[in-house]
Amino acid sequence: MKTVSAVTDLRRERQTLSGTLGLVPTMGALHEGHLSLVRRAKAENDHVGVSIFVNPAQFNPNEDLSKYPHSLERDLQLLDNEGVHLVWTPTPDIVYPPGYQTYISVEEVARPLEGERRPGHFRGVATVVAKLFNAFTPHRAYFGQKDAQQVVVVKRMAADLNFPLEIVVCPTVREPDGLAMSSRNVYLNPQERQTAAVLYRALCAAKHAYDSGERRGDSLRAIMASAIAVEPLAQIDYVSAADPDTLAELQTVERGALLSLAVRIGNTRLIDNFLLTETPNSKLQTPNLRFGL
Ligand code: PAF
Image (cartoon, rainbow, N blue to C red):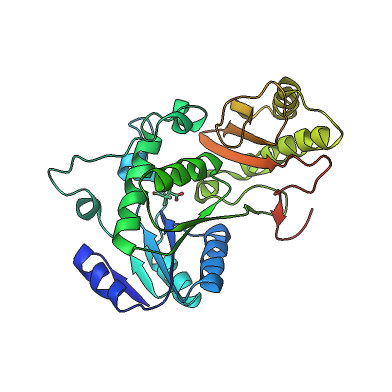
């Protein structure tokens, strides 16, 4: 496995990789969710590239960038064990050198939900992902369904800017109690960690109602909200039942929906979602539980 920082080194190493390249963009602090993307990329491509970069441009001033977990040595060992070929670990100065002033702003789909609560977040995501696509020139790029709006924004950006690659979306990997794997889960103390499974329970309750025929957006949102309200440590940021493509809130679910929510547990903000398909009582792209529930 080659690990490089400078763009020139990345380009040189990239040129030595013939055949298809799958890219897994990450911010490090790797967990099974990331590794599932790496394994999928490995299965579908001749080579796998991974970026590890905590992107300052996607954190707004109220978010503590400096506290984001780092575990570079461990991450590199995990990637080596998975048979990754090329890892890019640039510093902020390499990605955004002095004088840098070009940003990508995806419009409508970046506005609601996370976009509303985290101003500038998707501008930072779209910009760094475009730079990663240019730097690695991958044939496929792998993202987790856990960051559902990020997937919509990245797909829009890649289509609008004619990036010649396929965006592959992989199922959310969950802990045994349903909590979606996230690098931020390490911030939770034991009591908060127990509470955190409420996000999954709320989504399951709304999916159960949907499978039983509930199609009113307000009811699905209310079901999620009341499931969370029973947990004193959990504070709702938003609950949403939105169109999966436009992310506009739905009055009535007619052709599937993205159920999503953001909840604060103590000082940690967690997000999760289920994508409901249009088929009644369908088995949805939902829990990919490693240990089954
Ligand atoms: O999902 C993430 O970890 C980040 O948003 C990404 C895609 C690596 C861009 O910094």
